[in-house]
Structure formats: structure tokens, C-alpha cells
Amino acid sequence: MTIEPDVVAEGRRLLAVAAERKVPMRLLGGVAIKLRAPGELPPAFRRTYGDLDFATTKKAAGRAIGLFRAEGYVPHTAFNALHGGDRLLFFDDDNGRQVDIFVGAFSMCHKIPLDARIAVDPTSIPLAELLLTKLQVVELNEKDVLDALALLHDHPVEESDGDALNAARVAELCAADWGLWRTITGNLDACCALAPGYDVPNRAEVEARLEQLLNRIEAEPKSRAWRLRSKIGDRKRWYELPEEVAGGP
Image (cartoon, rainbow, N blue to C red; front, side, top):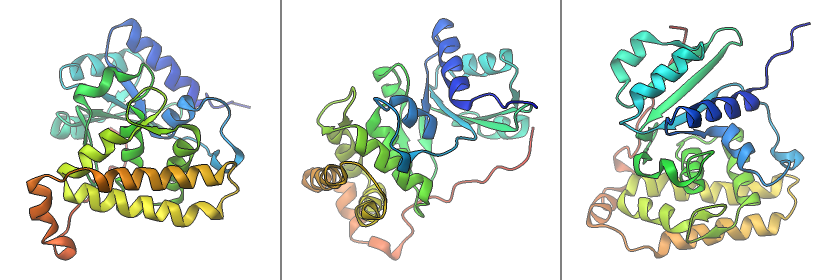
């Protein structure tokens, strides 16, 4: 019987290769949340991981491409030619996995800038941005809710990075972009409503952290662009429709 290699172990391995070759590359997605947990995730938050997601800087994109080629990953040639300035796709054909590499920013329903923040932590993008990548989805699914709650279960909400969720960073980004604010606050409210449905240790603390983050976002002074866009509200679509990528290279 063939045993499928552990995607979490592969994420760790690729990070070590990147560090050795001095390629600034960090994990995001569910594997990043698992690796940033201080211990085993509570049973309610455990799930399987299929693919890997990384971020790198604009300047390092070429070196990241070389790294994945050298490690046996197959590029999605057409997609990378068209979108390589922002996002790259590679495939692990032996294990049927896809690897996404976000270049300089995470861009799906909303754009989360990452270029200047890659070096904050050696394993993943900062926890603030990691949470935002989960909550920027306009239509939350259970996987996103579980991952967001796992982050808030394991990490305090503070005004700095490290092992805390940097509320100042979340509030800053939301205060500059009404659309991002609209989606993030709506999804934090949704997480508040859904949290009681999960068998979560320290649920009261998780709910308190959700409220703390919402209050911090609300308190941040909003930009002029935010105020102008808020007058239009939901009458105009405030999010992008991310491109679905299917098939191999």
C-alpha cells in the first residue's frame, strides 16, 4: 500500500529549503494555521489538508520559481505566463496536489498586501494577515470558519505581531478599504454566531477575542476613500470574483 506523504511535513520541508537558499517564502492557509498552533489543534478544528499555499515577495518570484522546479514541482505554464506577477501555480503530480504561490500580496475576493511583511515570522505570513486571508472570502465555508476560530482560539488579540493577532494591522487595512472592512466585519459577525455550534475549549475566550477585534476595527479612524465608498454601500459590488483554476499544466 502506498502511503501519501504528509502535506504538513512537505510544507515544513519546503520552508527549510527556502531558508537554506535564502528565498523569502512563507506558508499561508490551513497548513500555516496548524504549524503556528502552540500544540495540537482541538478536535473541533482538525481537518485534512490537500494543497499548499505560500507567499513570496515581488523581487523573489524568480527564485521561488527556480526552487519549486528544482524540487520537482511542475509549473502551470499558461497560468504563470498570464498571472505570474501576482500568483504562480505548481503541481505535485505524484500526490495530486496544487501549490499556490502569492507574489507580493494575497489577491482573491480582496487584496491583502504582504510584500513588506514576509519577514515578520519564519514560518507563515503574520497572524493578522493569515486571519484576513481566511475572512476575505465573501461566502464563508466551514473550513474558513474553523480555521479562523482556530487562530483566535490559540492566539491572543494584541497590538503587535509574534504569536498574537495584530489588531492594529487588521484595523489599519480595514480602515483604508471599505470593501475589505465590509467583508471582514461581516465574517467576524458570522464567526461570532457560529462559534457556539462547535465543541470548542475556552469558547468564551474565543468569542471575547472576536468582539475585541470587531471593536478595534470600529475604533480605527477611517480614510477619506473609505468614507466616500461607504456612501455607496452594497449598491455596488465591493469584492472581486477570484478566478477558478482547474486542470494541470
